[in-house]
Image (cartoon, rainbow, N blue to C red; front, side, top):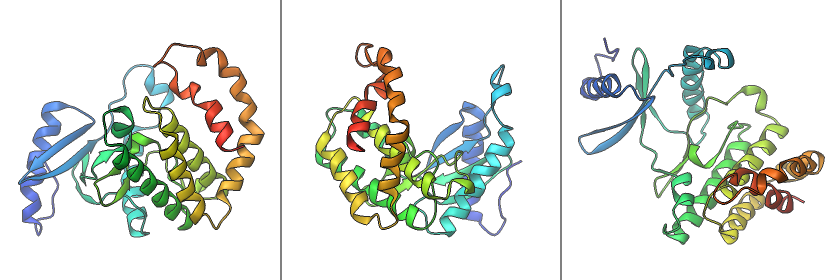
Length: 247
């Protein structure tokens, strides 16, 4: 049975459609379109086999992410609005295309990709200045609708990361993620870095550089993997570039 506030009759149909879609597809994330609007339904992950030994309780992760979305939105973070929740899933407003999709397509508008990535860097800096670390701001978890950046998939959010090292880790993960895509656009990467740096009044950039100096030498051990033919091991092939940018 779908749980939906009786006072929000306009959401009743949406929840029914979402419930039917989630039940029919079984997908963890489902796209819902109704009355010309797009929503996303995310349900509890079904963990099977040996994965049960390494993953936390799916229900706990589900509740944790939902709580993070609602809490961070109240704090002014760039996250999508939660439309509501049902027994086993919650609904989010559509947040647009992911940066991942833009950096995977060589034919994508270069200016649009660079602008979206720059806005993502600005939004990440704003989040850090609010005292919030995303936990894993990689390209597939950052959306752009042409106006706003929204960060999604907050399963890695933890209050313990809301500190200088957590912000620096965010920044490194963000830039490394962009560098690890088929499209190589150094100018767009530098535009994003400069956008973050221009707004960094709390020393995150310097902390990130310190982290790279301290642990960057571990990149040496990935060099055999970096020799794999394109497009394999892009996440390892991008590490020397990351070290150079933060040197």
